[in-house]
Image (cartoon, rainbow, N blue to C red; front, side):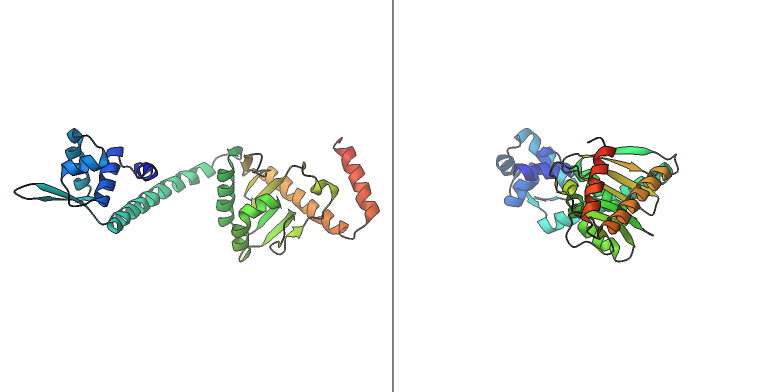
Length: 260
């Protein structure tokens, strides 16, 4: 019950309004005194609360010579009203925010930070839906798993290229990164890069451990990271020849390059 009251409050009801409506759903055709008793709302406030709910069309008021009886509207009708109100607000908010976003996109190129796993995943999903020409990505299995359905849906009508690490059943034609000592290490940091139409990109560590990523529309960032993905794909294809000596040489050179 506490959770239901909290959810109704999120929809704009006061706590007393939520309690009164819930009490009437449980026991309709009762007096204000009975609603007060069932809901725990003080008698001094119950009439005002019920009048507000009547005004909102959520409670029915029946007056007779002897007493006044209150009833809740059917739950199905209540839910329909809430859904219509939410949809109307959502449409209005969407229209206004999208207009503001168009103005914002006309600003200078920049890199901004986004935090929180849910926010990062949601932004990636939103970015994928905007794709019109191409998607280029590089991802480990944890981030790919979060975006698998969105990637599969986009792949049906937009070319997707890039490389994944430790991912089973890649979307074609994504390359599967070869398994190496580096990719097998549990301590190896996981990252992701997602670029859409060469216009917007999000990149960073996979949010399972580091809930920070970066969003940019800067063409230099986008070019460099897309080029990085292409070189990774190219080298990976060359090394699929299973040349053990070459693999050992690369491992040695990588450690020297990064001072590991």
